[in-house]
Length: 197
Length: 221
Image (tube, one colour):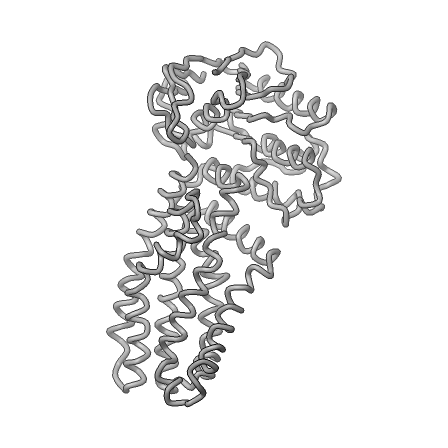
C-alpha cells in the first residue's frame, strides 16, 4: 500500500504540483496524465526517492517511505525517460550489470521483452525502440514491489506493448503495484487515473 | 561491497571499450612533459632541478582530463538514477568511481612518471622519492577530483568550473610531493613530506567519497 498525502514538489525554481493525495493498494495501478510540464516525471522522481518533496508525506505500508532513501530504492524499479543504456556494452552486459546490483535472471528478462536474439549485440546498434525495450527489461529482473514507469511505451511497436502489458499484469498478479506516466494508451486493467496540471 | 565491486568492474570494462578516451590522459601527460625540454632547453642541470615540479604539475593536469566524464556520462544517460536506485549507498558509488579513476588514470601516470623523470635527468636519488610521493599523490588527486566532479555535476559549464574547484584543493599535495623529491635530491630525508602526504590521504579517504556521495544525491534532484 503506497499512500501519498499533500505531496508538493519544486523543480528548479518552480512549484510543479501541490496537495497531491492518492493511495494504491497491492496489485493496483495508477496512470498519470496531463499536459507536458504538468509534473508527471517530477512526481515519479519523488515517488522513487530521487527528489525530496517540499511538503507532504509518502507512506509505504504505514511507515514513512522516504526516511531512508537507499532502503526505499530497493522497493522501487524505475524506468525514466532516459534509457540508461551504455552504447559500448552489449545488450546482455548492460542487463548483467543491473542484475549484479538487484539480482534476477537476465535470460528470462531479455526473453520477456523479445530481446533474446539481440543479447550479444552492442547496444549502440539498437534502434530507439529496442533500446527502450532494454531499459524495460530491467523490470523483469526486479523483485521490487513498486514499478515507476515514465512514458514506457515511447518508441515501442504493438507487439512490444503487448509484452510489456503481460509483464505488468504478472507483476500486479504477484501483489506489485505500478505507477505510469503516459500519453499513449497503456493497456492497464482497472487502473486509477491521476490528472496533473 | 557487492555494489562497489560491480560498479568498479563496469567502469573498468567501459574504460577498455573507450580505449582512446582512456589513453588520452596518459598521452597528454607524456606530451606535456616532452614539451618542457624543448621550451627550457636541454641543459641537464636545469632540467633535473625542475623535473619534480614538471612531473607533478603535468600529473595534476592530466588527472583532471577524465574527471569531466567520470560522473557526467552516467548523469546524462540516466545511469546515475539507476545507480542511486540500486540500493547501493551513494558513498559506495562514489568510492567505486574514485577507485576506477585511480586505476585507469592515476596508476598509469605513476608508472609513466619513472621513465619520464629519467628522461628529464632527475638525480637518481630523487626518483624513488618522486614515485613514493606520487603513490599517495595520485590517490589524493582521484579522491579530490571525483569529489569535485560530483559537486559540479549538473552545473552549466561544469567542465570549466571543475579545474577552478579542484586545483586549489590539490595545492598541499603538490607542495609536499615536490618537496619530497627536492629533499631527496638535496641529500635529505623525504620522510616527513611523505608522511604528510600519507596523512592527507588518511583524511581524504573517508571524507571525499562522503562528500561526493552527498553531491551525487543532490545532482539527481
